[in-house]
Image (tube, rainbow, N blue to C red; front, side, top):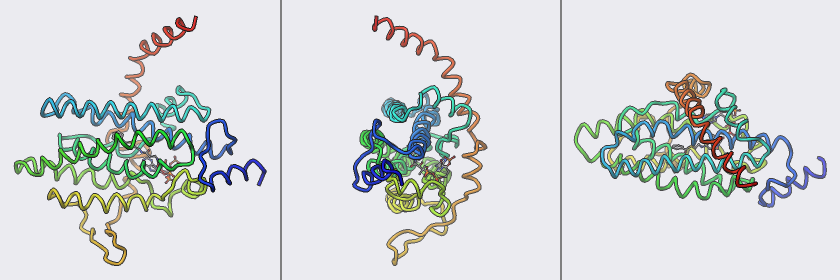
Length: 306
Ligand code: BYC
């Protein structure tokens, strides 16, 4: 091992953060660009399924809360793009990777939002899963990524409650509302479990990610934390988790659960989910239509420099 590499690993082992100007192996840098950009793209694409319901929110309060949440996601994307740029890649390159399908984003945002209850399910399950993952990432070894996570986690916590409130109201509402809430849970449950990525044995990047403390916990460990927490929350509001194999395991003190459909997962992340094409087409369109804003902002900044 070359001297620089040893010093780098020693820092990580001592739980010190790696900062943009520190020496780092290329593989670490590229690993982070891949993960942070995937994370940023997820925040930005994730605005679409929720944005779909802003005009149809059932009350002014619900509309205001949803708008605030969607705006937060834009902010998360921006912190994450900035963290990613500190690794030596430009925003334009990152956006190009997303729009040409070179970069992935979370599987979950390729499912449609069919009813208002889906907005509840996204906040409760999707943000709930994201919090578990992101709380762990607050301890990630790359300083700018870890610091971005602190604020993001606070906001995600509000998002999770926003979703749980909707689900709780609907499951305590009319029979039709209860059915809508259960239907949303049925559709979002399994894709939410997939958000944590493949099982540890099939996770190509986990071994380096754990060695470099990019990940502090494995995909399966985080999935289990989310599952244990969420089953109890579903019980509390009278909803049923759509898994006949779900049962409490007295020995492990965790819930055992059924098989995840990994064929569906790979189909979706490889671009063949319900909404992949629509999500990317919307992103490209928004960029084209908004180019004049970017040009005006850049021209203004240039004028101020002179
Ligand atoms: N979806 O070796 P693995 C939000 C890919 S947004 C798609 O385990 P890794 C919100 C993976 O990229 C929050 N692809 O990978 C926003 C890899 O393929 P590549 C989103 C996935 O990186 C708006 C391959 O599968 N959160 O909360 O060690 C509204 C093998 O996987 C997924 C984050 O992005 C997936 N779910 O672990 C509401 C968290 N999982 O790259 C809410 C940050 C895996 O070799 N990311 N793949 O082509 C991470 O923590 C990690 O990247 C993962 C995957 C746990 C996701």
